[in-house]
Length: 253
Image 1 (cartoon, rainbow, N blue to C red):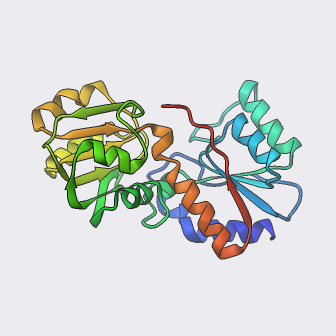
Image 2: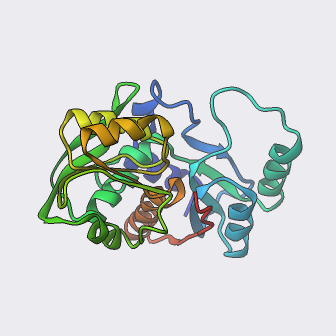
C-alpha cells in the first residue's frame, strides 16, 4: 500500500494531534523513505538499532514504535544518533512514533491492553499527565491475590522489577499507567484503590504505599509498553490487509 495511506490509517486511529500540548515526543512520521510503497510494517517498543535491524531482517518497509528518536529539542546528527538515522536511510526503512497516543488509546493502547489482560471491568480514565488522562482504573470480576494477578499478567514475583505487597490480602480495584509513572500511585491512594501497576519503581513512594496500605507492582517499563504496539499491529493488519510483525527486544527494566 502507499505510505500515505498507511500514515492516514495510523493517524486516524491514534489522533496524535490531540496530544501535541502534553507530549514532547514527535508523534507521527519521524523518518521517511524513498519508495512510496509499504508491503510490510514492523512494530516495536523502542527506536534502537536492535529494532531497526530486526525490522530490516523481517523485510519491513516501515517501523512503528512507542519510543521514537525525537523528543522536543533538536539532536546533533552525530554518534549513535547518526548511526541510527544512517541505518534507516540506507535500508529505506521509514520510522513512525506514537508515545502518549499509544499509552492512552481506549482500545489498543498500552493501558487498555493491560486492563484487558487483567480482565478489569467498570473501567474509568485514570492517571493524569499534563492535563491528559493516559491510564485506566477498574475492578476485577472477583477478588484475587497479588500472586494470581501477576500470573494473569504472565509474570512471577521474581520477574517483576519491584513488588510492594502492602495492600489487602485480596485485590478488587486496580489502577494502571504503563512506563515510568510511579508517582501516579498517589492518585491510586487518593482513590482508595487496592493495587497500582506501572512499569518502573521509585524509592520516594515506598513509604506512601506502606502507610496507605496499597500494593504497587512495577512490572517493567518495557513489558508494560509492549501491549500497545502489539494491539496496533493487529488492528493495522486487520483494517488494511498489510502484513505486520512485532520486534521483541526486552530490556528487563
